[in-house]
Image (cartoon, rainbow, N blue to C red; front, side):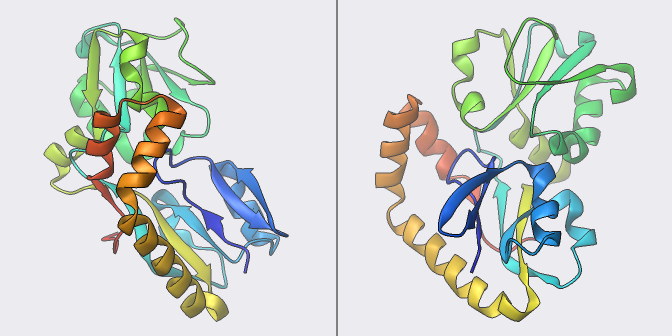
Length: 224
């Protein structure tokens, strides 16, 4: 079975296990892999969950950020109401769709009035940036005066966790995929402390921040 893979903390890029190897796949490439028949089960953006490719079905697993998650931040040089340009890390453009209403309420303006840019890193080209994954966990390194936890803000306004992605699988392999993914998640949960400490050391992320973040990741059933 060719499986997509969610890394424990830095949710993107996806990895496709193909012919025994792991190939990083940007979100924009997930559907292409599916349609070419190269992947049997994979995480799939919640923004596309209403249009699952033919021959695939939803699994009862997903990835959501609870209110205390630390991997999704808006960093700004300006007061929130004065932001005129916003950079989004390449590969995370789908976050704008998930956060549009929350951002417009928070920034007190329509996103149509803000200059949006897709960036590869945090440069002084924009007033603010949406950071996800490891970069958000290391946010203090950038020295921005304003740091807003968007997972917490989403929960405050919506009253529910932020759903990022849901697992889908080929209909003829859905039962097998569900068992394998469930076992993988159970193994991760049983060894979470060890994996968290190892990841923090490898990526030079403060352990206390990562430990708090991990405790607010939700891998269970999705409410789409």
